[in-house]
Length: 133
Image (tube, rainbow, N blue to C red; front, side, top):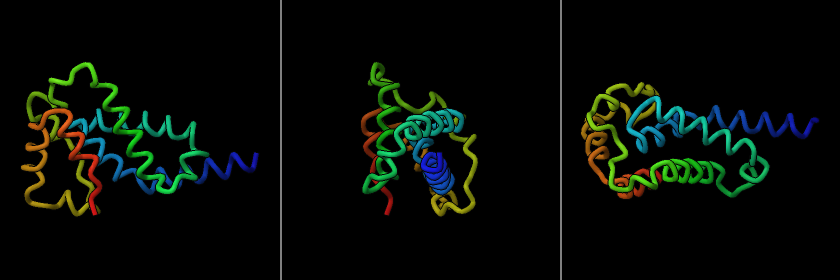
């Protein structure tokens, strides 16, 4: 029982510490706040079940990001010709800013989000996958 409790605490610590970064990645993939929240939550459900393996990976954050991107790609595999973003930019306006996020404070964030929304599905995934240094 103690081993499970320790794993649960490790998972919770990971989740709390990475939530804003996972939400940012999910938002860039989906283009909508609510869809991003759903994607992060479903990803965390998958990761929790396999936390023993995920937590012992060389880079658990990269592992989780890959799980999220794969889950998103599976949802849209049949609609490769569609854009992953909403037809209009109303979904982009609902993003809740993260005040600790330097990117959120950038002047050209709106232009970046609109440009991402215009990319085809595969190009958008490739851009979002690229880690920010």
